Image (cartoon, rainbow, N blue to C red; front, side, top):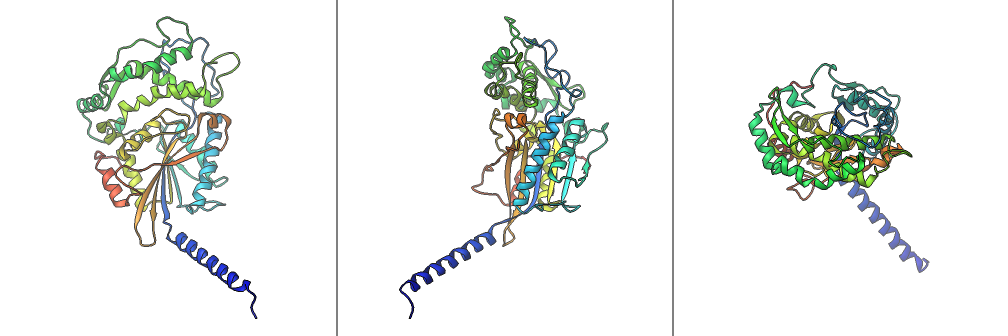
Length: 404
């Protein structure tokens, strides 16, 4: 004869089976990630000559860097290896790459711009993503202008400087007003530089906007142009561990860097976010991303510059917000990650993430990585891939760039 507990045990077993069946069905219904595009900025580099404008005054000498101007630093490379290891674990958990061993030859494609800092960044990231696998890192010769990353310099889309300037002025309200809105940050920059000059530490230039000499772009002058580079140098110094130290740059704190980051972010309100500029700056990369999401390698990594990330974000209509940084700024190694997914019925959708490391994580060379999914405007959930492509393509100017 069965005990009184038998019905209860039977009910519990049936309930457990039902839960497992539901979980299995839910897992089966989860869309599968098919393709991933990573559009990322290079890692921590030494300052570009003139990035902090000539005539900038400081209370202490600028620190010495361990590499030539513009080059990726050894610490910057190590931070990218850590980032690659973190991305590998994430992509493996999503079923995109194997958890261990080398990916198949056609699973990962890495392409960089031609500058030393982008090539070296691609190589360091590849070492972290797939250790001891010798993943190829492709790029054009150093003497070439790659239209994928520098479409204006390459002249791959029709460019009318007057139309560009009109778009910039409409978007910003005028570059002089843009500078006026950053008055507090400009004052903070003088305090951090600590030169003691009563009129400030930065050169005093009037705001201006004009066509570049080759007609393929625009030139910005004035406080935003000058201060943006200086603010970026201060961030790079902090991430590299060169400041603050016991004797100089004591005022550089994470809070100050985030506040000053608005000066650097404002540069993109001129060069990548106005609609006319977005259409051209994001054109080749946007089309490459769309092609990959439809029928590319499992993972396509494109290593370029902050202008590439901000231009693509503008085309997507999404904000760039990350811990430790001003809104709209892009940290070293920061990336937009686009994914195409397919469900059991064959429907394909897209998800977008913003992947970053904080200034302190870069400084410590640790694996603390933030990945935030970004909601795409006009959709209540992940948009259908076909609609996503149509919407983005409508914002991109046609070009004549050869495909890499």
